[in-house]
Image 1 (cartoon, rainbow, N blue to C red):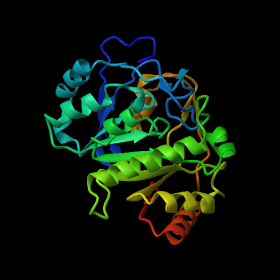
Image 2 (image 1 turned 135 degrees about the vertical axis):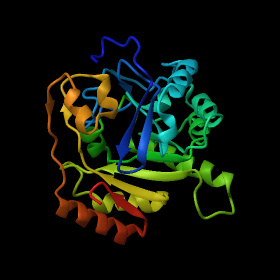
Image 3 (image 1 turned 180 degrees about the vertical axis):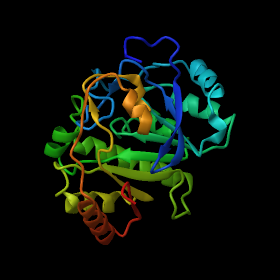
Length: 276
């Protein structure tokens, strides 16, 4: 359905098959227009319609829970808060997590670009989830601008600061445990612009020390306009997109395996890959 026709669109979609998380039920706290603090060159939503760091409520919690109860939530392996932009922009993300946890014990994951993690309120909200998948595509500001095209005021220093504060908050929940709970995963989208930055990224990963590193490469095309179906478009659903799309350059299997092995060797961390 095109972006200008949002009547009766559910804030819950799927479940879809996620290589990282299994059968994933999506929660969209943004909806339309697409709104994010990044405008990534590979985003399956296409060019982001509103680029901002201002938090507000986009979708009332009552609607999200109503849509959730009407969905096929019982078959999901995980509930993933992602959708039509950066989910931490939604001021009710913490409330939504708490309400869903009253209904089910299914793990809740958040996919975030980390741009708002310097805000203590945001960290307090997201730490209620079970899995925090945090984006880190760039080891320097030049690459950040080339790939992620962030909102004004966002740079690598602010992003890294937020991630490290989040990790400190997680550790404070279980100070005597060597395992981070909730799980902290760093996700990296490898493209031609950053595929030769493995050593630099490894240095940052060694500083952060997440539970896991997830390596990705663009597997979905870049649409010329926003169609809300692209928030979870996999397989046959991707063919329903009403806008034209263009394929993005991916890593070869050989490149991906080399990067994976190098990161494992340089960091000693658990590394998973979309190619596995």
